[in-house]
Image (cartoon, rainbow, N blue to C red; front, side, top):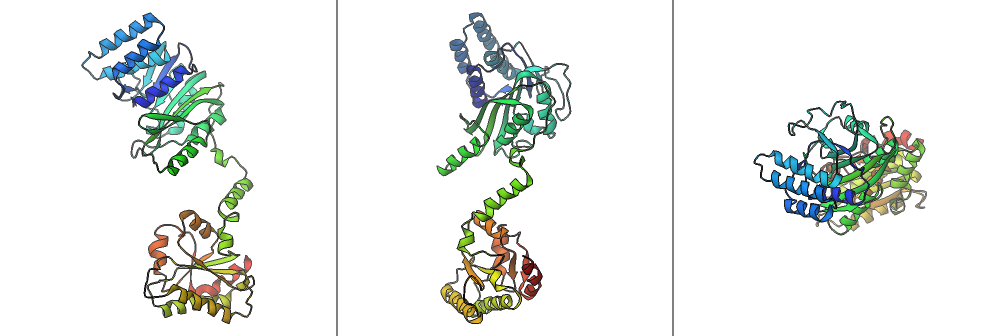
Length: 412
């Protein structure tokens, strides 16, 4: 755990906003060391230009001069204490860290801790994600923070492969605040190594990331920077994620609206009560493919209610220059028209051609498709579509068993 330029900037912002307690007691969960990307001269310059108390300014600058002369690595921890004194003005500071200096308390944060005191500022700067019992970790932060005290969190958000057990999402902090009467004082995302971007609500990070994506930019590794005030002295409450704080009926309505009712695919493919999809092997000859599809149409005619059925024919894998797709589809449609007595599209079987779709549209289609029809000519089904997990949730039905769908289809 280290103070980098981003943590330094965040502490500077909090100090400038005058939202921190005066003369606070401070506890670090994870003792921080000086990372080194902030030049010591930069810290000295900030102290010289910003501190009005000349005596305190001299004490801190003299202490920095002494620390940089030290030969052991403990000086990196001592430099952070100077930065904390500059930004936080603490009266006392303690730390819990299994690998910190000898001054740090060697306690396992997976377990409850009892320090016989609470603190005005509790700092989690890159520690929580390494604690498997993260519930206990956030409960500990709550329990050892004074009323009106400040909780400072810096946690991984995106990327950081194998850095810790968890990447933390913004919703966690907003839901913690809702359930435990915290006030979120500052919330930042780190889009790159040297800058912070502030957002004011739980959707802010999502909107910001979307704007970056629209500009063709991506984030490899990013942190969240959060400061919250504990407004009430009460027992810690475990939050339910805001997305799920709705009734079952409302939740189901959200799902239906998202993937079904408002989708243009319903009109495009004339989706009905029963929708069947087939993935022909387009590497076969025209005659073979036509015969295969006509067998499916005949089976539907023999066993299902045509007025309730749409047959979806996927063109995934069609790259055979030796066959004419238009001829195949025209032949199929002519067969459909000649075989079925009622030519009214709304009363007879409907056939829709499905070209390759994006992942969202495949999801919509999969939810509203009852069966994948398979036979000896369904190789493309297993090779491409299922491998990409686009419609692998749709139950399969062999052509010879299509008659068994009668009961299911009539029940719809």
